[in-house]
Amino acid sequence: MYDPLDNQSYVNSTIFHLLVLELVPTAIRVSKQVNETGIGGDTEFKPTTMETVLSDANDDKPGTVGILESEGAGGDDVTLRVENYGFDIGLRMSELIMFKSSNQKMVDILDIMKFVCRDVWRVLYGKQMSNLRTNHRGTFVLVDNSYKLIETMMSDKGALDTVNKCKNYLWFPCGVIRGILMSFGIEAEVHAEVNQFPSVTFNIQTGINN
Image (cartoon, rainbow, N blue to C red; front, side, top):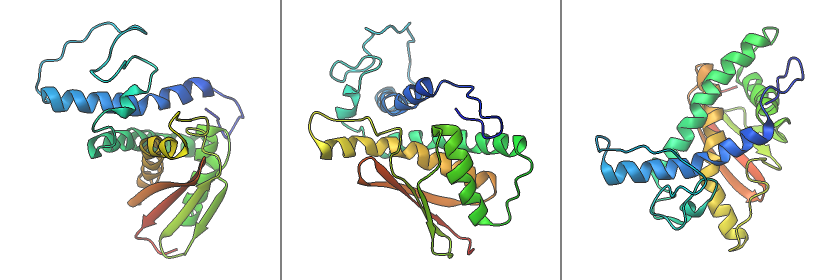
């Protein structure tokens, strides 16, 4: 992860990338377990190795994506978990970046969106957003022409299946953006879409006219 103040990396970007890639399979497994056993159900935790079968999905082992084919993989409970992971990170990361760069001044919501595009994206992905647009009535469109989390993904079933499987992963950056905005007291709805893989467009709706 990139520090905008001293240009040093404190977290290996590859490790961070691999960790985030595991969020969706983990969210699916957790949701399946909760639905099958109930929140108060008995859960037995065992040491995990690379050969440990993690669920009843086909050959579901650590580091594999077979769980993405399971029933309920795109359910609301899964997307909510993934979005909440991002939201918690965004909420905390905003405070840290602002603390370490106290010279920054946020005059209006457009400055905050530029902060997301420039500083937040550089911390997470080592680069800035590709584009920022607004109608000056509370709606913003942020574009990353090559979103790192999905740019290397490829399904053996073709491009359409690749995009469909990527959709759950996009809830993570949506949560990050929503968390950043909430740290400034701005409630927002954030949705992402893939128009031309691996370009991702983030549509942000707030109630603030700028």
